[in-house]
Length: 433
Image (cartoon, rainbow, N blue to C red; front, top):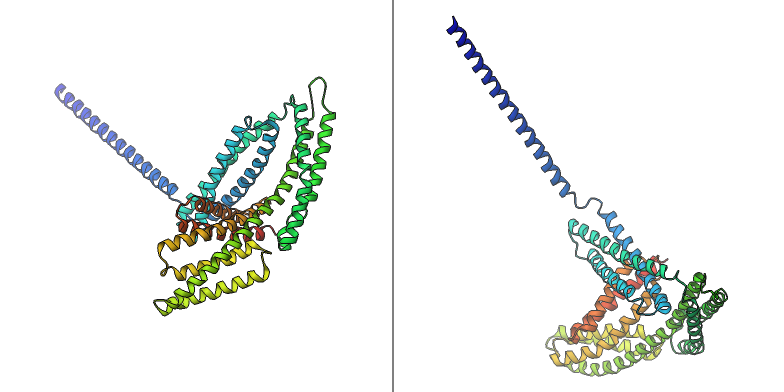
């Protein structure tokens, strides 16, 4: 009986052991299955999150990038003005870091405009690539604005320290006197522009002299007000008056500079046009020889068409003179480019290089003139990202042209600068309406 009881106990113990092992096995299987399911869920969720539909929200993202570009460009323009005020008030040594911050911001903005140019390129990019470009544009613009904001804040604080207010008043008076002495020469320059060039070229500056006089009067008034507020104890509260005097003096100088700059550009264009007319007349003689010796009918027809185009353009320029040298440079430059193409196979390398050097001078003048006009238009916040992007691309192509040693390559880059500057001008005028 005792032996039987012992056997029952052993059977029960074995049964308990089996049930325990089975329960543990089931538990392990359940845990493993749960972990596997969780892992698969997380894996697919990660993949879904890492690979969104590339086109989702792309339009709004690109719009945001365009807005960021406009804001950053306006911030850079404002900081340029602020730097001018700061240099005048505190000197170049004290403003060196501010100038460096502006240079850094301009570099980032140039990169951003280049990416925007790629977004606008006629060759379509993939949706994923466009998303990457747009995000990079936004990041670059935010970094540029952050660099500018930090230094603008520094100089806002610096201006609250008015221990040097008496010296600032004296400096303002000296600079106001110097700017006032420019009024009569600028008036003479305006009269010359009106009498020499097409009225539309000087119309943009017709109010510049009056604006300069008005700003100088305001600067003088603010300076005298600041002077009257100086305290013998050296504790002054004239920051607002000094800032107003600096601002209005800066605007006066900018108005005067605009007239002198326009005159210089138009004079350069007139000289470049005269030089291009002279060399083009020589080119026509060569073209007529090449026309008669053309290797085939198609080449001969292309040379004939180019000759006719140049002759018409030269006749128009002779009839109108240099009333609008920039426009005449553009027209004649385009006609010369067509002739270059027609004569390319007939000219030797030395001739092509020499001709490119001559044509380059006028094209660079035209590009710089176009860029100066568009820069004036972008002072308006209403000018959108597309126009600013074309302007940045035109500036980039002009830099390439100026740095290129090969005159043929430089001429191509300069012509691209002119084309982009024209596009920027058209877009700026359209968006500002």
